[in-house]
Image 1: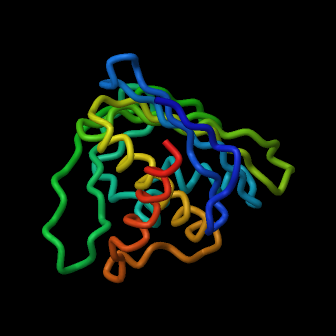
Image 2: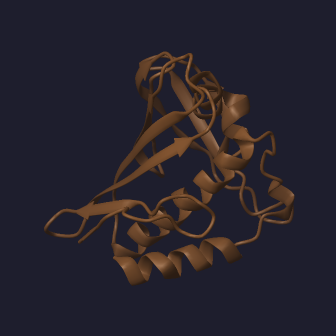
Length: 182
């Protein structure tokens, strides 16, 4: 199974790409993103506990650097939802301002590679997530990361996610779009 990220979905985030193993059990999801913000702002959003909380998950503990402990707790679902279980893991790759890769129990290995000079206004981000699961998990992963990258754009504009107002409607729409594309 394979899909390419040739165009942007409504909301401005380009569609992610997916590759699967022959047996359909191992998957790689990728996104090529561009943000009109300097690398240090994007780095703070993808590689610090405060930044991650604004668009992805609460991170505690968070020990920056290779081998550092990290535990992520996804916040989507709002205040009325059951708390999500913690996803413990490790920071598996780290290069200050350029590369942050995490491996956590529930999400596999995922990482962000940033491109852009410190004196430039924009930052390109290459994202990759390797994991195992069935085709339903692949669609959930594509839609979930896509929605989180929409939230990342908002976080970078100074509007962190309001997790209490989060609803699954956007996720469901994105999942349907990916089902048509994959």
